[in-house]
Every structure is written in structure tokens, then in C-alpha cells.
Length: 276
View 1: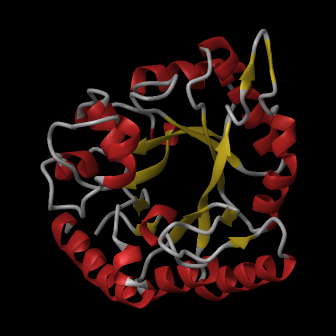
View 2 (view 1 turned 180 degrees about the horizontal axis):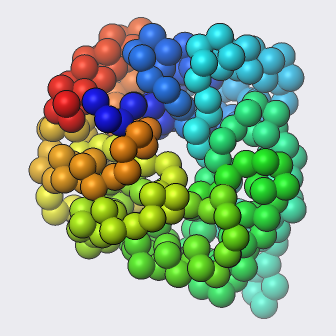
């Protein structure tokens, strides 16, 4: 298989970060995506925080080293965190995320991912440029997503942002669901410079979306091969060797963590068979 697999954090919602890393290693995956904390969920997910718990950070760092796995994408940073108030606002500046970026750097994270969250275009572009600068200062790459529900809505807009930021170590996170929902065609990926494609999220879905993009992205991500997206064409258009992060809506709350672990063994096997 020309593309190794990774396990993105949505796929293991409810697991702790150490368990996430160890599971990825057991499944022969090469990378994970990870945020810095998990709030207690309505389904009884346990809370944990890499911000507050230095011991947990050490455990995660050791697990990553033991498994020879890297955090391919540091998640959970949004350019729009805050609430607009009249003519002013209390939106957090990129510098307010410096401590989080320091933690990701400490953990050996390859790339920081940031979502624009629907900011006004000029402000979103300038904010992303500052995040990219901060990532470079910490020897990390910078990546950003596009989707129909954000300021950067499609691949064309993402390439405009790359040009605005300039310099190296900047790439686009290509999510199969968002890519096709924004009107993307696989041939567009094949025409790109390989360096522009950073993190890749892989899932399946119905050919035509229903409901809000945010709810579909959260709740309707299917196992590759269970939906109708042209995933074979999508993957074939990617540069060889790109890690594909499985980003799925799995029922951990209903299954329980151990059953979800067994289920993911099957998911990974089916994905590899589909893409072989």
C-alpha cells in the first residue's frame, strides 16, 4: 500500500491520549492527530488535559517514542475563539495560543492545524499568516483546513491563502469529505505540488450531503468503502507516501473503549483492503 495510515482524534473520541498512541501502534499506523485536552462528554467520556497535567505529557511523549509514532497534526486551535462584542471583540490573538503551541512542540508535533472558523476573509488570512510564523519559530509546519462552512471554502481559496502566507512549511489539510462537498475533483490534487498537501483526512460519506456541513462532518463520516465518495480516485491522486488519517464518526459511546478498539482493527483492515 503506497500510503500509510494514521488515526485521527475524532476516530478515538473517548480514549485517552496514551491509549490512542498505543492503539495506533498496534494497528500498524504511523501517525495520530491530537488535541491538548478532552472535556467530559455527555456519553461519559473521561476528561484529560495535556495543558494541566505534566505527568500525562511525559507519558504521551514516552508512548510516542516507544511506538515510533509522531503527532502528525496538532488540533484544537481555532482562529475565531472568542465572542464578538459590538464594534470591538474579545477574539483571541494568535499569541494567546503560544503556550499551546509550545506544548505541541515539546511533544514533537510535526504540524499545527488551525481552523479559520468563519472570520472575515482579510482578518482570517492575516491571522493564519501569524500562526504560520509562530509554527516556524517552533520548528513545526503549519496546516489549515478548508470546508464549505469556513472562510476558506474550497481548494482554490486554500491556495490563495498559501500565496498570502508565503514562505515554506505551509500546507493544506485535505479532508476527503470537505474536498468533495466543496466541489473538488481528484484531478485537482494530482496537479498540485506535493509539498502543498499536508495532512490528509480519510472517510467515506453519501454522495450528496444532507443537513449542515458541521453536523455532517461530526456525525456522518463512514468507513472507507461504506459510502459513495470516489475515494480510490482521491487516494490515487495524492503524492505517494502521504499518511492518510482515518477520521471517522464511530460510536465509541455505545461500544465502549475496548469494543471500539476491536472495531478499529476491522476498520483498518477494510481500509487497507480497499486501497491495496
